[in-house]
Image (cartoon, rainbow, N blue to C red; front, side, top):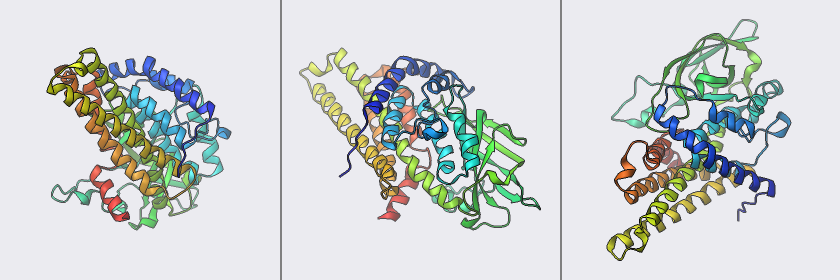
Length: 392
């Protein structure tokens, strides 16, 4: 039986993050949502850097907090309740450092991990996705059938001391201002999955460019771009892990961090529920002797139950990661269920709040859009169901 035990210090940190999210992050998030994706705003990263929360799983030996996955999931939930985009920005940092933590050499860890643990804010990005020109609308599974079809390639120079990388990547959160990018590429001479390799590329490296800013319906406070890598040259020891180990490392990275995407969804659902509950109380909707009283009270009870179940699913997955149990399936289920709950709860919240909830700029409308975006992060719901079905 999994037990989600947090230390006194971790509980105090989670409470501190809750206050920070409510008082400082949420008000700024509302402004950033109106501004949209056009700029990388540093106000929220600065707040998080002061608390060493830009990547709280980084071990203490590299300046991080060294939080457990259970504690990290709880922190992400609180951040997401204030701003899902801010939480997504932190999770993207964690995605970027996970391959380094698992398989990176000492040089990579010492050079790049401390950047996300200092008071001056730095961001990181992971570059995996690519635009597929051969996407088949009638057969959507073709989009994700074969990861080795990626076009970004690498090759070593004659003496093997340098690596040349060429290609482009799509949908990169934090990419425009990232101090480093953890990129997945394939050997130029092969399309087999054993040809995949992760590399760490400094953000100011020659040949790294931002090609397009993506404008999203939700998570608008996390800046997202398309990037090009034009004859990027890096030292060969910037490769992460053993030669050809990129495919397994990719699976591990996704299996671990899907849990945190579920935590974001729980935070969004919680914020929407609290807003709907407040509206119902303020408008005396819970005290009406009419059919609407039953509908609203019943809906709120369902929402609360769903959120609690989603949270437990996320914490179970986080616990399995901490104790190194088989976490791949439970992590996928947590992400899938939590994002579905977020979509349902935010939709119900708008129904309870009424017409005001449909106005642009109202918090409920933002929660609704953020929840929809979460269903596409790190793969669509369709893809996650396909993976889970294969594990049955």
